[in-house]
Amino acid sequence: MLPYVYVDAVRRSGGRAVMLPPGGDDQEASATVASLDGLLVTGGPDIDPARYGAPRHPRTQAPATLRDAWDLAVTSHALRLGVPLLAICRGMQVLNVCRGGTLHQHVPDLVGHGRHDGPPNGFGLHQVRISPDSTLAAILPDDGFIDVPTHHHQAVDLLGDGLKAVAWEEDGTIEAVEAGPSNVEGWGGGWGVPGFVLGVQWHPEQGTDPRLFTALVNAADNRAVGTRAAADSAAAERAATARSTVLAPMI
Image (cartoon, rainbow, N blue to C red; front, top):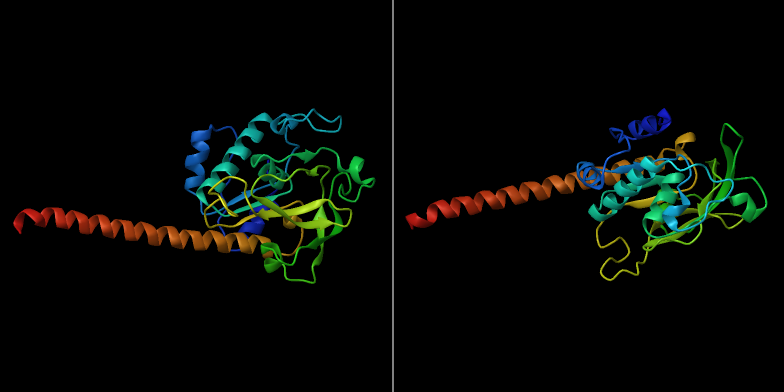
């Protein structure tokens, strides 16, 4: 199941939403992502800690094996193909684990309070500080501090390769990541490909600020335009080559 607010947020920002049910293999994930202009990785259950080499905390939920495998696969292929990516809550954790990072499995144990949790069946509100020299700050150019809807008990611990932290709760919990320096030769800050890579730990779909979704849709639209232009150029080159091949015997 997927809360409809995600679909609504994409549509309000000018995008067309398609849902990708879990369960496909890696080949299907690759082909699926290749057909997309952008990818939104949503919130959901805890990731199996075996995925990042950790024992299970007593408060960690039972694994959702099919969804873990699918979300990690489509996220990995989006990064490989340069497909614009917005990852929300669990989605940000998937992005981090996909790049070899780890998670804190129960944030209240770490920070000594429950601000991140929100009410049992709803969303709380807390403030985050945004790094001024970040893509996120360009999207949300406020005073560097914003109130965000929240409902999570896990968070990024060790950052994955190619990611940098760009927002924090006042207790130091990482609240947003984006493409950063990589230790993999040749990958660079954005894995060697242009694109939009952003993860937020909060739930923008539960608020009234559309700017993160608008940024994703704009990045997807720009990629679609560039992809069509490249395809048209390649088709024209093939046509010119074919004409030259036909004419060559006549010269």
